[in-house]
Length: 460
Ligand code: HEM
Image (cartoon, rainbow, N blue to C red; front, side, top):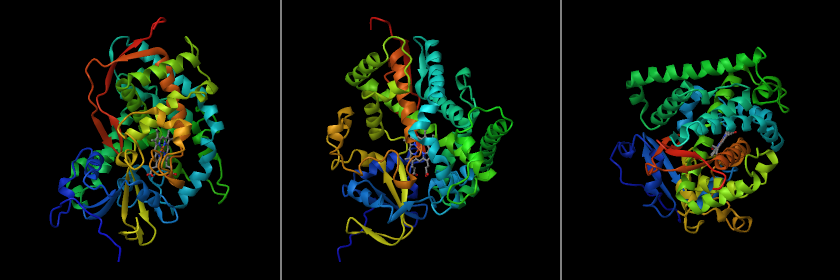
């Protein structure tokens, strides 16, 4: 018998590992633990649920085999996100009819052609960001908050014809606070016994109020469209209200449309804002790469040239900066999978049907088996001649298989454009010597990341 046990950190009898899971940044902690288990897999008992963590690229390759594993929702934080995102694309169970219907109806809205159609609106919002920073000449700006304004306003306008107008406000939109608190609460609930959740009555009340607030906003987005105030008929909302699923001939019901709108407002902004923030941070740490980025922008967009879609598509350095940022700072740090049947991975680790298996992006994306000088921010890894040598399963920032990110092209187009415009206009200085302070709430972002922005002068 060649089976081997999946090793675990030391726990406490009866309570397992629950007491040692930190209340904040649990995934960072799971990443740190990975160093104790060079075999690329370990297990823990958290709130009575056996969980397995994998990050060896060959083990991950098996877990990404969709004939053997599916996207796990049950017993994960996403089960709680369903309290507000329902059977939206992100949180739907694979077997739910809603997933396939929405996937088929919405795919055309994410084609390359669709990106070209959104470009004008993406540009308009990115120019709002530039306008705001121009008015803050020499002052510190909260980089992450402004990228969040950008990404939220972009998905709302392109997807639903709805204007948040975030750049006109000093405070972030109340929707964002309600969302952040809800995500943190979902994460917490997934790591405690249901009995503990029941005892936290005040938190539960707040959670419900936050959900109500988000759903009210979504109702008003849909209402505005129904009253004909919105723009664009073939955007996400247009498709959801009009299109029928080619396979079932049915259209999405009203509750599902509401769940999808909220899903896109969430999934469509949190992550891209994190990507842009981590990219900016990485550029500050790597002046030689920042110089390459400036050179590219100055070549393709000299002076005040406003880039068009084709200019953005011609870029080479900026896309590689984004890819390398997603390697070292994947905004979604962990994804959940589960075996369809009892199985064995790596030839020796037994997993039971329905077991909770987590792919941890951090240790996977820096695994020495797949990456040379894993901690180094090196955009040359993404040159065509180098990328062919990559391990095929050591990079999963957008997830895997049919449940991979539908918004990948959208995010990358938006992020390329925003970074290009920002670099065309500004230089940054880090007056406070910022130390990375990751904040996790299902996705992760830098907390309290401020830089001073100045407009670039002609001779620079
Ligand atoms: C799914 C990452 C941007 C919409 C996912 C998943 C990942 C991911 C890892 C799979 C999650 C899982 O397996 O549990 C990212 C990153 C982004 C990004 C890193 C930005 C850099 C976007 C944008 C949109 C979007 C801009 C929408 C416009 C979605 C949706 C799903 C998804 C709807 C669920 C797809 C399905 O299960 O059918 N994303 N995402 N994402 N993403 Fe993204």
